[in-house]
Image (cartoon, rainbow over all chains, first blue to last red; front, side, top):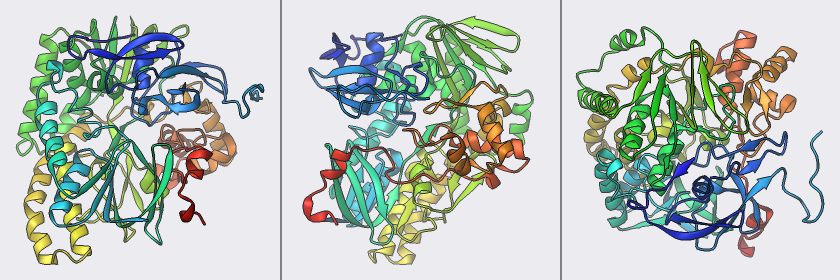
Length: 106
Length: 459
């Protein structure tokens, strides 16, 4: 679990993590917002459904893939927060056509 | 199509220094960087983090000065939040993704200043939420001022572990334990590498960090082997041979390796560096690669730290100017001399550090068959060993057997581990097993981002 230090970096940008409002400092990434919100997982893997949180925070590991403002599979650590941004966990594989069930791995 | 003399990918120390030098020589310069602000990883968000006392020292002083110099320089087109995803090595046209659309740009020369990534540390349980790279926690501190709460374990070795411990303790992180994984006798072996006198300034800096960490209450366990992270749904404890400790966050670090994803994707010649246990592109003394249009500067050409990176950046910029006819060979050599001296001084301590912090064998080749190696496709060490027994001769063949390296990270996390496991299983060298050969796009992009190329540039 990560905590902010508002005395050093004021939390001024309001984003919504899984629908819940969270205040984060300007310049922070969407992945940081997820960690500050205390979400148990930012994604569930397409292969085994395992929970993951960001691992590298620098665009290497792709373990922070999330749905940001309705766009699936975005690297949350590479997206800077904007006011009103909506960040949701990426659960399993992205649906090719919304409304259809994702293909289940054998 | 826009045209530039020199495109630089990466706005860290090497990229910033190269851009400033090249622009001062009259070259038109484009700097492409994925981050929203200059600094690279070592000086990440240095402009925004200026008031954080936890980061006081070299980060704010040297990093701040580099970023100010970069911002003040004239003649640099700086393109943040941009990703290089392809280069046509015949025409010199690069493809860049920014603001959700692709653009093609004609360049006379490309300088890769892509820096370093943390060496992946594939221990059992490293995919559990709450386990991260040490560098990840440092990035959270720099970009968001955030610190881990609750019992914190830092496991591994290397200069960054001490720097991070100090920064996090200054910032008020919870009770912290360092599980140092260095082998017995590494220090004596390291002394034999020499370079201590020339590198004494860096050495003194390191010693003072160790002292400050201890003074601030860091608990240290030495000689740790066979680490594993355990927990239900997230990490709750760390075990090692002869010990166990509860934790809320586990930060792993076994040094950094060059980010060679793009240089390998471009098919440039690379060598296996046995001292640093990583691939590095073959470079001449100017940073020129095996291809005429492409150069490499900074940690992406071999780990040397930020001071070495600025020197190699300036040297590569001088070479670009010479190749474009803006500097004579004599003048380039004359101007490069002080940067070469700076480079030699910055690298003096490197052999000592490489020996002192050589990763343990089980970090390079996980012993436990159940350990996940490929985080994207969830492939274990045991599966890779089996593929090797079935005939996979290296990481490129293993893709067909297992999909290792075919997930979204394109093998950035598993490539070296897969090669090392196959090499060990087949009794060959890692060099013989080979490096994973990525393909463009260097990062996944959407069909929409590709389709948004300006119409006149398609086809």
